[in-house]
Image 1 (tube, rainbow, N blue to C red):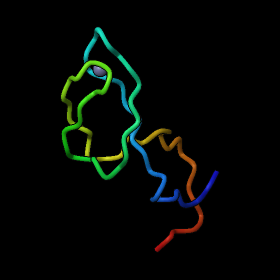
Image 2 (spheres, rainbow, N blue to C red):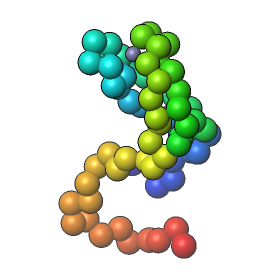
Image 3 (tube, rainbow, N blue to C red):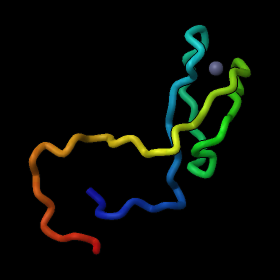
Length: 67
Ligand SMILES: [Zn+2]
């Protein structure tokens, strides 16, 4: 576990919303909140602006706030 994720390598992984494509797309975090085009099928879709939590906090209190 790394306490802080490097912002530079913060890419957004998502699956093309086109059901006939479903290609896994990796776009830079700089495109958050913007529309990008799937280079496989050409479908335009919106990159979610908010980072999705990968793991749910299963009641493990972190002892040490970055603030
Ligand atoms: Zn696609």
